[in-house]
Image (cartoon, rainbow, N blue to C red):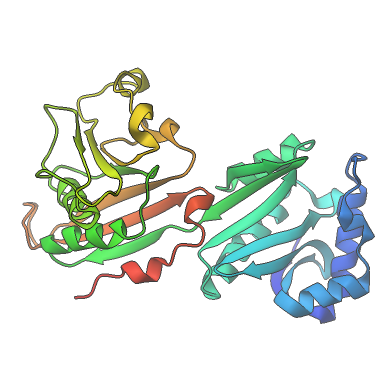
Length: 312
């Protein structure tokens, strides 16, 4: 069905959005309590669209998908998301989500939020497929969130330390960081910066042969638990470290933890450190690094990531 278009709309499109909402939500199984979307009118939708806008998908000029935006701080909530029954499973829903993310980023938002009904597991599965993670449940409602990844340029080797120190100002007890990156990418250097910022005891060095080190706070703050999972082969090996015993009271940093440590916490930071090689294939200290930060969970939705930008 072409041509298909997804565009940002305001109150002028209220009637078209209303037609989509009525068709999409009216086709769902009966729910208790009923979906409040079925109580929407053209007037109420015009009011919402006038406040924060929304999206309308059309195919050959016919309205086939829609959603409303509701911004709170740096988070954009997606409401009244629906696709008319006869064009479901044709890609319209995914196009709407991608357009919503593009719009939210352009508006300076750092995350998307959505609420799904627990009685509609297929709806929850759709959002999870689109990169959203569960952020809690409230009665019959499941809250899901998608925090956008951020990339930070680390021009010099010292910038990895500085970046870690700056990030430490946003960390609190219970936070989990999973670090990925080739040998020499700066994982331990970055962790050293976190230790400096948290003001913990002891030298932060690679714990490869110790597996895990605990660095107590010198200022009555959270301890730093520094783990090197390079030699671990399975999730069972992570379990044997009993990190859950210290997780709630500490900031836990796991190097080489991808694929092993994610189960320790629903909310976490997955950080990939990359070194961009110069003219040769030899890694050198002056090579530029990038830190790609993927926040997972509601904990990170309201963080001011711009404050972490490293100055040259």
